[in-house]
Length: 169
Image 1 (cartoon, rainbow, N blue to C red):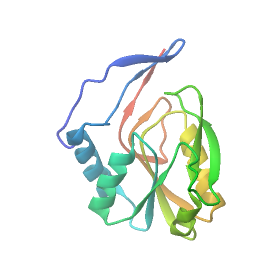
Image 2: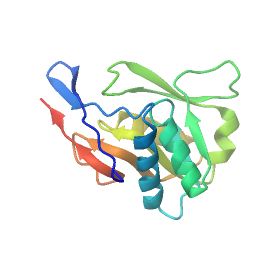
Image 3: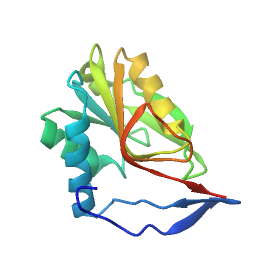
């Protein structure tokens, strides 16, 4: 992407299922290149970015900087300071365990009535994407785009991505 390449290790994430593990955390060169490329592909009607916390956070920051759009982080734990949090449970292919996705009530007005782009590093099974979409819809936002560095497994034409990774069985 953008002239940057990496060798991805093949890692078993479930019995008989392996992935080419893409981890951009701490890789500034990859994060910057991917963020610039995805910002250029964003539909013009997007008003705000939403990202799940941790691996895609740096990517959302770069896309925000490049596009001028604000971003909101959906946390993976409910914090005591959150007001009227909106939460959904999800099982990601890379974690294999239930996780919580939580939108702080303070951020609802930043999504309500706006067109949202979900930003993630990899979209595979679609579980995280589905839970994020539910949260956005529940608070009155509209998912206008999904952007990810890679899709994985089945083809996902609804996702704006820079490439596709296979699942290995």
